[in-house]
Length: 196
View: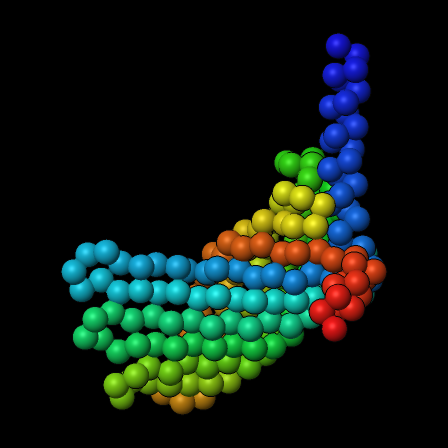
């Protein structure tokens, strides 16, 4: 019985250490989110799909900066198609367990805040409105580490475009599900050298 309890304590400690090790200074994060995927099955139903690849470098423990791309399509049969795009810089801050005010719900995961700013726009086919301008967003998320280097995550985000054109200012709340791969700098260098 003592061996079983000791094994459980070591496993929890190892998973907590794993979550901390992946968000240390010098590591890389690459991956993306799938946001708002909706494929209608009824007659006349449409589709709404967006992908959000992103990458970042940890400049300090718990702090990553990088870039993002956001591409989305929305449409239906006999209706105009809407294409949205955004590209720019992002930043993430991962909370330490003590900063959350409550114990971490899952010992091998971390809460974070993400913000972004860049350029973006929207174009609607068949003579519809269009706009382009400043894109910005922010919101909380949670990354759950299923392996030492892969985190599944959920992100709720306010996303807005302050644009020029007939579309003007648009905003929405998005919920994205995705994954991130966390690579220590030495492992990232190894992958790059293997590709050459």
